[in-house]
Length: 278
Image 1 (tube, helix red, strand yellow):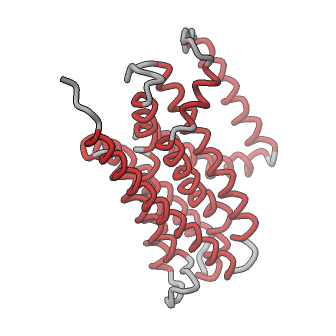
Image 2: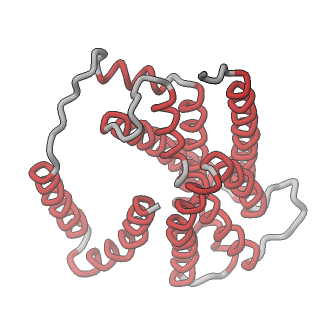
Image 3: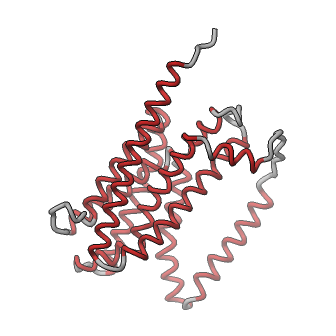
């Protein structure tokens, strides 16, 4: 939850600070400032974080490949691609969609602030709740909620409701909350799948955490790339293509919810049939 809050705060602060730097020094200044900050932080990380030697019998690359091919890890990863694709789809397309609502640039910025702000606010709460209620059930609830909210964002062509500012605001807030429900528990769920596989037996193993984090960020980033491509290709062309694309992404999120529900039931059935130690 804390990691997700930090990530979202970066997304929230980046746009206004970048715009401010652009107004002060033109096109090049934001890249110079942020590039310098990245170089300094990379140097601090290089000097401050100790290197840990991997001593396993299988190479780390092969171990990563084995873990990524696990059904549990792969399905959670595919869900991350869908969920982050839905969020990234909105960044290039939502502002154009809201032109028909006669909003000022400031109000459009507030809608984006609502999107990422609701995500940031719910992330630590979701982290605490999922540790007690279970990570998988929270991801499933978030998948269904995300799919429903995307149906009303356009709204979908088959939803016979006219576009309104109130419905857009509610849908955007719901999407932010749903993304928090789906992404925050995904990393510990992948970690559990990694340790349960037997490839990394210790739950507090640095290797297990490193693999789970690497897999999480791989699927997370891939979902963002796909979402930006969809947003640029379909979200900004015509209003009808935007509505269809957001509706299809919502359907994919709902399908992902059903798949994870089936996976959870299969895992519980397998655990019941597993022989208990004497």
